[in-house]
Length: 204
Image (cartoon, rainbow, N blue to C red):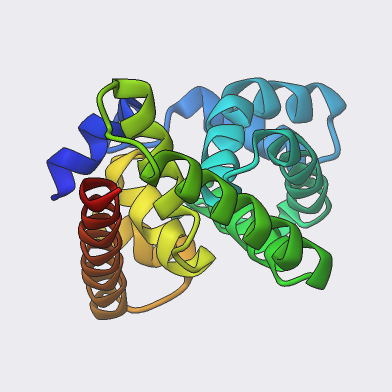
């Protein structure tokens, strides 16, 4: 299911972050801690696209992802002195992005709007055979919308961003065992939703 999910979404994984922190990046982070505006710009240029992609997949609403990432960077730079160089900057930033996303999805107006949109997407695609790749992609995205944001965040970090379990644990501030359980829950829930949708499409 993991491979199938990535294939259906047709979104390539981000480049792995396994390499040690770049000495140049360390220098720019030090400058950011000293209040250098040029360092803020450098870090935003380096991580903005990745952060927007992450937010877009968690929120499932790309337009809102831009606002969330802007908010996340403001919070990151305000608290940059709390960042410890023994960790990776991207895991620290990703944690802020995820928290901003989850906070947004807890708002009542967001829940009502998203529920209506999800139902429309699933019903429109499930009402006809999935003969085209675009229909399949719409179905996958509609079903992903039905996962809770914390579970979806774990799935996105693993399947689309390519983070390992320990890195996901650092981003989400949860034990590695909880990461495993969330990923298992996400895959199981998606499989159940997909099978139900396919039965509806077949009987339509």
